[in-house]
Image 1 (cartoon, rainbow, N blue to C red):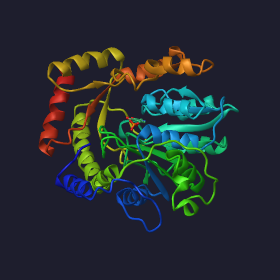
Image 2 (tube, helix red, strand yellow; image 1 turned 30 degrees about the horizontal axis):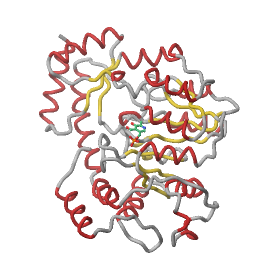
Image 3 (cartoon, protein in one colour; image 1 turned 180 degrees about the vertical axis):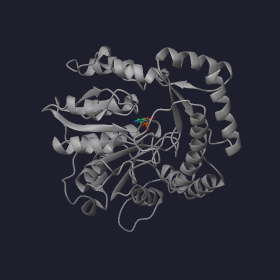
Image 4 (cartoon, rainbow, N blue to C red; image 1 turned 90 degrees about the vertical axis):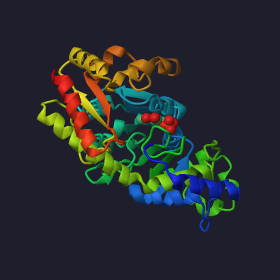
Length: 379
Ligand SMILES: Cc1ncc(COP(=O)(O)O)c(C=O)c1O
């Protein structure tokens, strides 16, 4: 989360005093969650948006709305937060993990190779704000009749060839936990143009939603079924309504800083990982690319010595499949979870260092910071 100010406090203060925490739905019902969902759908460029309690639950809604059965397969990348795989397990299917491409996002060539008769969906995860190769993934999904889901947890507001991430696949899943660009502490949202998936998700997120006054208008295409409890309160709706108004402002600030950063790095002949859409990248971070794992390690030590925060991507244990596959093995003993299948991902990720874009710095400061990093690396 980048910005909180008096507006967050004011909206919460009024809500607390009103005691109207419960989220009501319906045609003529106002309220913060309703307001956020319609603004968010408009911002992302889709027909439907649904708030839930987390990004993981948004993924569970999306996958469960596909009616998957045991033995069905869902393709996911080797570089993603464990929640992507966990959501597949909760939808009864088996996660099939594939390697990443040069951009560190899911590799469409590997996806194509992994498709079997049992494959039902692909999850494109836009890690650290970087868009996946959506044209290639869309093509594969169309040829094999698969559902393309976007995990946009780390890339809210980003875009690919002009379309906002989350609007390109059939379903988009966002997280609003505290590490994300806009946040209400914990939260998430699902977006889709598909009315059927939306209605199913509505049912999944609230076991009792078919008993409310809006039952008839909510369910046009499906019969309600037994769901769970992923409802959010108006507290989340209120905070997200305010946070959303700042999304593009934050992205502009991040992109402005990243451009300066990249410029300095280029002038100093320091390589960065290429993106499938440089302008659509959320610019929350820069991936510094080194010729080898050893090079990355040496530069990490140099940067740390100068108190520069560079993050080896694989240091985050929940983000690299070889660190979490043992949990999948227990659930899906027939899954193919061998570390040796991911040597190319390991090599790519370990040759990369991540630097967060310092949003709090002024533009001149950013330039100085980038110059310092360049000097340390070129030393
Ligand atoms: C790529 C990715 N997918 C899914 C999630 C899950 O979101 P949440 O923590 O809101 O459940 C996260 C959270 O960080 C994530 O980074």
